Amino acid sequence: MLGVDGVEVDLFERLPSPFGLVRAGVAPDHQDTKLVVDIFHEAFENPRFGCHLNVEVGREVTHEDLLAHHHAVIYAVGASKSHDLGIPGEELPGNEAAANFVAWYNGHPDHAGDQFDLSAERAVIVGNGNVALDVARILLLPHDHLAKTDIADHALEALANSNINEVVILGRRGPRNGAFSVGEFQALRFLPGIDVIVDSNDLDPHAGDDIETVMKLEVAREYAERKPSPGNKRIVFRFMTTPAEVVGEGRVQGLRVVHHGFDATGRLVPGAGHSEVIETSLILRSIGYQGSPVDGVPFDGDRCIIPNDRGRVLDHDGHPVQGVYVTGWIKRGPRGVIGTNRTCAEETVARLWEDFDDGRLSRDVQDRTALEELLRHRNAEPVDWSGWCSIDTAERKRGVDASRPRVKFVGVADMIEASKS
Ligand code: NAP
Image 1 (cartoon, protein in one colour):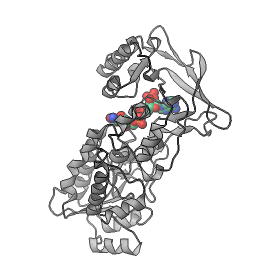
Image 2: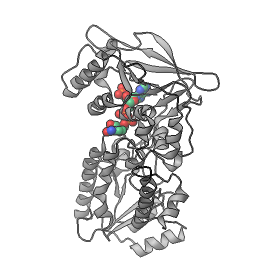
Image 3: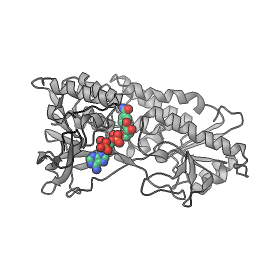
Image 4: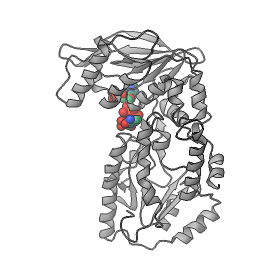
């Protein structure tokens, strides 16, 4: 949008650091993926760009405030909560959201103080999407491998003392319908000191016609044919298996699961197999994220998204809310890789320009000076782009001696302090 002369863009973010899931979601052993943020530097240094980190909508500013100071407001607030499994025993300590584990190892301030029980030899992950694969790798990668990344210090230390040497990943369908992407599934074979185990009985009898399902089944077949190396850690894929009950006295001691089967035509038959308890003290449910409502903005509680038509926010009667837009996971649900968000944002911005061209965004709004005055009045402590650059520089400096890309600050106060240096 900044490419169009005269357009001013203000960005609001509740943390003193930008980049959402790139910083707090992308796994630390995928440093190259994080380089995507470099494409924003030029835009963020544009004088028509206003960066207001450490300002939360609903805390220092409201939705109405944003509308009073801007012709259009785009929500890109993501989806950070985890679904529940809806099975007995779920309240037991040791049954945790993978989303929280990811935020913990990535140093998100909300989860820096979380604790995970890594004392047993086995962890179980429910769901087999790319997040499950990220979590499995981080649980099992050797210390020297993780120590070269920007993983949070508290996680690096806890994982160095972890006893976990086996991670079981449960998928409720066959390998050809695994939620992981083929590339991520295939890349597991290169992990140092880690075997990938697939039971040949779990292989779907038919691959189907779709190239992706064919490739997933093919990779699973290759894993099933491999011989494990003695002494290696293990990622064990269990397919056609659903969780039925979290078991334990006072805390998680196991997960009861039910196996399914295939009929003669290759269709999945729910509950056709047996049931068993997998012993573990740590269950991480990685069954997708869900969005949360923003005060004053319509919300679809069933789908956990902001209701919209290709990015235009809709009210409860299905009419567009003038000047309000949405993009990313809070627009379409928690699906897609980083590149998907680019297409998604382009679609939303195209709607915004249509509305601008049709005169639907023309109304009087207050200027930037008034916005700064409002933030002062609300006792906000905004961190601007140069403040973030100071935090970034300080984190990178902290990493130099340890040959790490950065050592993250995991507390908001520390980040604000660093932003002033
Ligand atoms: P996801 O891909 O939607 O996977 C969710 C998994 O949970 C699926 O296996 C799903 O099974 C299972 N599931 C859902 N409800 C369940 C239930 N009640 N019981 C048992 N299993 C259940 O979600 P995600 O892994 O959180 O990933 C979110 C998005 O981020 C995805 O688009 C992913 O590709 C992306 N991402 C990408 C990367 C990367 O590119 N490296 C890394 C991380 C995340 P079904 O498939 O049978 O529904």
